[in-house]
Each structure stands twice: as structure tokens, then as C-alpha cells.
Amino acid sequence: MLGRGGVRACWDKEQESGQAITFVLLTTQRCRAERNLIEAASSGASSAIAVVASVAVNVMAFLSILKFINATLTWFGDRGDIEGLSFQLICSYVLYPVALFMGTELGLDCRRLGELVGIKTFTNEFIAYGSLQGLLENRKTFLNYTTFYDVNDPVNIAYDDLDVNLTQWNVVLKKGFLSTRSEVIATYALCGFSNFGSMGIMLGALSVMAPSRRTDLSSIVFRAMISGNVACFFTACIAGLFFEDFA
Image (cartoon, rainbow, N blue to C red; front, side):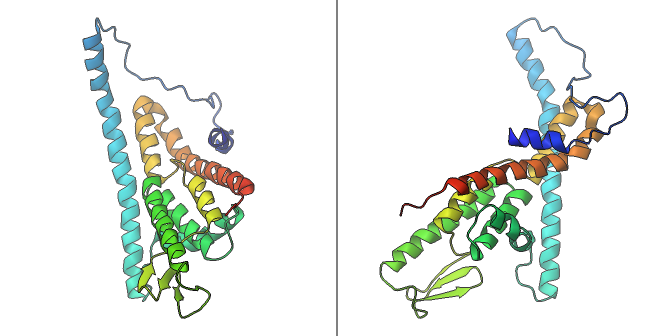
């Protein structure tokens, strides 16, 4: 409901006279009267080819553009002696305030969550959850380490930006780990399909069903993606508000 309300609010109501705000997705094909189930199934499968193909090529186009930009940033970063310059690194700083406003613990957790949100927005939520899983495993390793060594002693632990080095075990926890509260907030913040790949899916599918509205769809698809992300952030805020650590 939050996503739907956000998209509705982002729709520019100052449209040309005679245009309706609500979309009516009607195909230009005339209605067919199939005579039996087999004919209807075959006809439906044939009609779906255009939709599936359009969705696939749009997703590939959006993700390819983002991959190209990421590779370009990495290339410039190597020339400027900036290791690992990418969208993920930039998002860890740019989205720092967003992570903070959601209730994430101040410090490195905000950068880690900002990076996860960036991964989710510029690729998809499955890759972002895969990165979150790595942070969860790092936390388990860290807690196991604390049962043997005192982490307050600098001899036993070292920090390198987001990485955590468990010196006694000679193990480096890449990207470190999140606190329990930040893990809960991250789980809800990443739970959504609002990313650039989904923009391609939406534009590809709806453009086939309503080709005459392609221009209108193209003009609002980015705002719809932003609204979907904001809805996820609101949900994460509520989760953080009611979170209590009973450990």
C-alpha cells in the first residue's frame, strides 16, 4: 500500500487535457473467440512471446548499462589510485544518511547498510541478500571468536575500513558484520523489487500491453522505482522502531 500510494503521489497530475490518471491497459488486438481449451492455451502462449521477449531484453539493457558504468568507474579508480571504486562504494557514502534515518547504529553499520541498499537498487535484491548472508556468517564467526579471545585487546583484533581482521585466527571478515538491530533493519530495507532491473521488467511488460502509453510509462518508471524504495525504507523504520534485543 505504501508503494502504491507513493507512485500515485509521484504521478504528475498536470497532464494534457483529456488524459486520465488511471491506466487502462487494453491491447490493440481484436478479441478472439477460441473454440476449445487447446486453442486458447496455444493462442495465449503465442501472445505471451512478445511480453516475455520484451521483458528479457529490457532487463538485459538496463543491467548492461549499469555494468558498463560500474566498469568505467573501476577503470577511472585504477587510474586515480582509488581501489575498488564502484557504485557499491559510492552508495556506502551517499546512502549513509538513509541508513542512519532508518535507525541503523551510527558508524560502520550505516556504510555497510548503505552499500547493501546500493547493491539492491543497482542490481537486484537477491544479490543484496547474498551479501547480507555473508555479513550474517561473519557475525557468527566473530561471536565464536569472542568466546576464546578478548576483542577489547587490540592484539586480538584489527580493523581495516569495513574489514575485520581476527589476528589470532589469521582470518579476515570481508565487509565486517552488522549488529543485531542493523541486521533486522537491513532485512526489511532490502525486501522489495524496486531496482533498475525491475524498471526494465515493468517497462517491457506494460509497453507490450499498452504500446500507445510507452511515453507515459517511460516518464514515471524511475519515479515508481524511487517510491518503491521509499516504501521499503518506511517498513525498515517500523521494524527498527519496535526492535528489542533480548540477548
